[in-house]
Length: 370
Image (cartoon, rainbow, N blue to C red):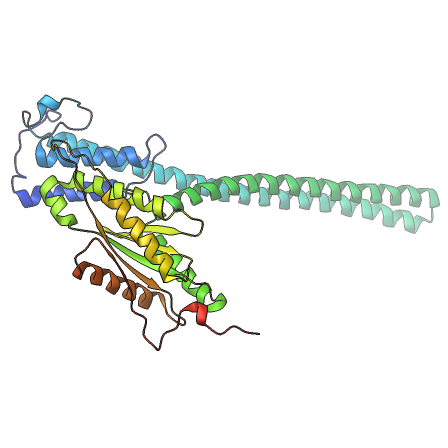
């Protein structure tokens, strides 16, 4: 039967299985939130299928620890899951586009109705003005008075009707646009947040750094950039597996978020096992204090891994650079990154501050206009 699980046929090569698992995890990280399922649930399902493909662990939906390694890999089930998820994403996008098209057509329909009503109104007004002109030509003062008052009342009525109609149309369209705007904001936030660690992603970091650099150039707003790297992360992945590595990244991100929690602080996943943070400060002493607090906090993490008696313990290396006068984003990143590698060369689990040459000047030393 096509729906029955099959034995492990072709993906026997370890490299192929690892590539498949990596592709499934990436798909899970970048999946869209659906109406009946959030991103965390979707990512957990993809992670479950990745483990099933590599380790023959129970596939998602089967909670049977004793089944590990005792059942064939369900390649047909994996195919059905991927197809069904892709179909759900496709339907979700189609519904969103349909909603957008509906708003546009509502606007077009409302505009068409308004033009049609305006044409009818213009016809009635023209007829009444004709009666008024006839009364003027007849020299009948009573008829003239009557038609003039009728014309005034008609025009006033049409003006009020048009105002009410336009207000109703604007209110209706505004409500629809507000709803669409909220959905777009939610989508943008989803696309700006790293799905694994739930901190900002690289795209959001680049936008933020560019804004900070622009404010620094115009207003002299000081800032310090931190580059943070999890020490020996590849060793963690190799020894304990990718699920454990993901747990290390999540716990580390949570500890970083606890450290960079002041208003104006910005924390993002730079990529892989690297994070980045920006604070609106000009004191390297404050930067060093925050860095030391961060090092201590990560050292205290206890990360439990299934099947291991002792918790996994990790550390981070930190590089920090103060924004210099006239410096662009690329140069700022480069100096912070060089400071990070200096911390690694000095033995890891420490913070290094970027060297500032005599030709450079921090923003607090920049001349101000009178």
